[in-house]
Amino acid sequence: MNIQVHDEQKTDIQAIEEVIKAAFLNAEHTSHTEHLIVKSLRKSCQLTVSILAVENEKIVGHIAISPVMISSGETEWYGLGPISVLPEKQGLGIGSLLMQTALARLKQLGAQGCVVLGDPDYYSRFGFQAYPRLYLEGVPPEYFQALSFHRHIPQGQVIYHAAFNMKNE
Image: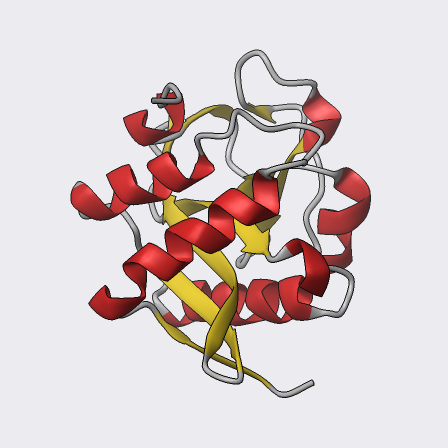
């Protein structure tokens, strides 16, 4: 398996949407709006990181990262997601490659840290962990996790961009 990673280009947008739809088609916890979220983030210039995994010139994975607000006023924090890998390519390390690449990019950008909503067993492999004083309203605390790049974890409510409130069309 020869996977290359690179930043999204305008010519990739339709293929990215198809990868996201396919990745979440049969997912256990999904609103089936993940592709709409990425589209809205892109349109509102809030898609800070958009990285593709490509195999044989075909997009097989994608990761999106966007800024979040924290009620305490902390800045330079970002939210990871969605992360998408074609179903037939899941379990082969593509998601891990996307995660490592995206987190490295955030560090290069001077980010303070990153939050994610998802499976604690998966995301803990990358250093994410739950901090009860940093929370996403309405979400069980163990599923909302953070990774600080500078050892400081802010306190307060995390607020994602309005794109995350998308309804399926």
